Image (tube, rainbow, N blue to C red; front, side, top):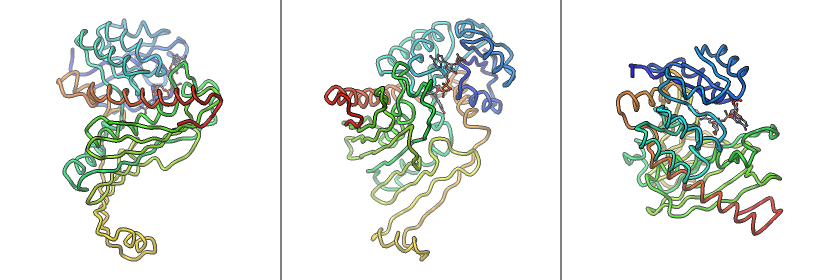
Length: 353
Ligand SMILES: NC(=O)c1ccc[n+]([C@@H]2O[C@H](COP(=O)([O-])OP(=O)(O)OC[C@H]3O[C@@H](n4cnc5c(N)ncnc54)[C@H](OP(=O)(O)O)[C@@H]3O)[C@@H](O)[C@H]2O)c1
């Protein structure tokens, strides 16, 4: 293998497009091929993103000898099959989040990766932005004392439900799978552990897709993480990590800008409520707020791609280790099981949990 990773993309949808555009600023990566169910789409994508080779099938991409790594940007229910096929064809794989439809599928994918001597990584791009490492270092370094509460949200509102993979149960859609997986990942990252119990409430669509979900994760050390996710509602899409000595607010945790990404560290001096009230009316409060800015080179997707290059070419630790992906899937499995169980007990009910 050379000094640069040659990428093949499966699928020509929304994230494949963003990834291909973002990749242009990657230091050690280049696009080599793209495959689509439609040769016409593959050609249009290749022309738009200057990809040298295009194919009217996914098979042809993974059979292409000029490719080192395959990026799986297909619907969730297809991650398992196409990741395994690519690994067996000798390719490394960066697979979109959530890595599979279930933990069992994910475990099988990693087993095939090991057997094939290839690297498999889940594409949680927010983990490649240095902002995430920066606020996490503050938490781990004790800046807020013992972290005991995490709050996070990731919501958007779309009216485009027809033909949308996110609203299709057969393609493993739903808000938990689409965006809740980020909140769960961040909560587990802060806890540096797996939860001992999880609960969820959800608002369902007519075809029993969780359009909105809200839940909690409890960890043995005492930390409680609450999260909200949704595909038909707006929210602030922030994260807060609250501890015994202060708290950190991350205004844009999931897709931080490359320039001027921030987090705010507040160290509390009681009584906190009084300090907040003073701040609200413009009086100096007693809560010091330190705004930290983190800049990053390139684009979010070039950072993600270069992290993959470091794992493949240098043997660096992957941005998301296997245990992290499996832990995330285990939580998603349990939350989705609870929703299914509620539906079974209350058929026709659109609010469950
Ligand atoms: N990391 C991120 O920032 C991020 C953002 C959005 C989505 N994602 C993840 O990326 C994956 C794809 O999401 P997306 O937003 O790109 O979806 P999308 O726009 O619907 O694209 C999915 C692509 O998959 C292919 N496909 C194969 N079988 C399909 C089927 N039965 N129905 C629909 N499409 C099918 C299509 O490509 P061809 O027609 O070319 O074969 C389609 O363009 C999901 O796993 C999602 O969770 C990640």
